[in-house]
Each structure stands twice: as structure tokens, then as C-alpha cells.
Image 1: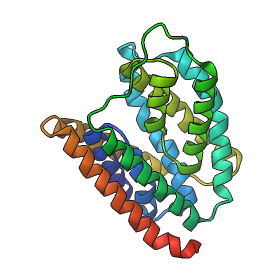
Image 2: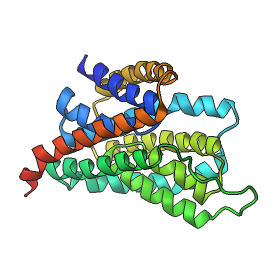
Image 3: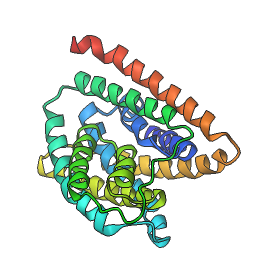
Image 4: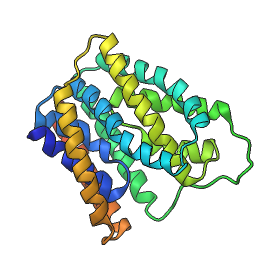
Amino acid sequence: MDSLISGFLSGLSLGLTGSGGSVLAVPLLVYFVGLDPHTAVGTSLVAVGITAIIGFLMHWRKGNVDFKTGTLMALTSIPGVYIGSYLNKSVKGPLLLTLFAVLMIAIAIKMVRNNNKRVQQVKEGKEISRINVAGLGFLVGIASGFFGVGGGFLLVPALAMGAGLEMHRAVGTSLFVVVLNGLAGFVSYELQGRPIDLVVGMLFVLGGLIGDSMGVRTAKSLSCRELRQVFAAVVILVALYLMWINLPRVL
């Protein structure tokens, strides 16, 4: 039940704000479900990848997935996931959660700053910088493997500004990469003989799908700007809690 509720809360935040929902997954899995930090990261990465399948299929049906660009980014992102997950195991739990808290604050600030701004769209016809796409994919992969997040908050700007995709195609293509990253994360953890709690992960996904659909319906009657501000405040509070608990252990 704890896993279901955690997934619901993460999915609800994703449905309400449109991004960043997976950043709550690791704290919920650690402090509400009771997983150790390293298992929580692996379980979160797989759960986020499975949850992204629904959105990816919806965008695919609408023609909003650029498979050529997405595959290019995934080819460098997947090795990054393996490296990130490998680096993750050498970092002790308190330090891992402290670094995760820093990431949470960065995401929250980005969400507030981009309240009414869409990612700059590059004019059609601009040649895609394949080096930029590959490099950004690698960095996103490392972050995904290390922290257990989907990386969509980094992938969308990368695909829009680095690859010149318009916004809807950037979102759809990012979900394609997130799905592949989740699969890569699962394979990486299996190859390294590291634990992933698949039962918790599946319950988390189920709760996430319910919360996401409810959040999307609720968001239609609320101000997007205010929702993002509230969500950012919640993320920062959770991040400060993580620091308060774990930073003394690191020091």
C-alpha cells in the first residue's frame, strides 16, 4: 500500500505540473516505503521508464516522436546510464541523498523560472548538431543512472535547442529516450547484481498512472503558474529535509 500511495503522489505531481514528478520518487521510496537509497534509485529508474511508456505511445500515435534523433541520443544516453549506476554504488547513502537534494533544488528553481516560458524553439531547417545531441544524451544518461530520475527535465530543452525539434516532438522524443533509459537501468542493475524491488516498482507505476490521470484533470481548472510554484516549494522543502537528515552524516 505504501508503494501504491507513493506512486500516486509522484504521478499526481507529474499530472498537475507536467514535469518533474519523478524527482519525488526516490525520497518517497526511501522514507515512506522504506527502501535503502541504492535500491530506491534503481527501482525509481525502472518505474519511471515504465510510466513513460504510456506517454510515449500517445505521442507516437500523434507523430510526435523523432526516432532518428531519439535513437542518436539514446545510443549515448544508455552508456551514461550504466556509468551513472556504477558510480552510484560507490557513494554512500547519506551522500547520495544529499546530492539528490541539490538536484531537487535545481529542478525546483528551473520550474519556477520557466513558469510562463516555453523552451526556445529553433527555426525549422537548422542543421542538427549531432555532437551536441550525443553529448547531452551522455550527460542525461549519467544523471538518470546515478539519481534514478527520468531526465525529461533535461532532455526536452536538449532536444528543442540542441536538435531543433519543436516542443511537442521534443516532449514525445524525450519520453522515447526515458523509456530506453529505464530499460538500460534495469539491465545495468541486473548485470551488476544489484537489487531492484520489482514488486514495489510495479505498485509504484500503478499508483503513478492513477495519480497522473487525476492530476491532469485537476490541472485544467487551476493556474499552471501557481501549480508550478506550489510544486517547487514542496520539492525544496523535501530537499531541505533530506539535507537536514543526511548532511550531518556526510560531515
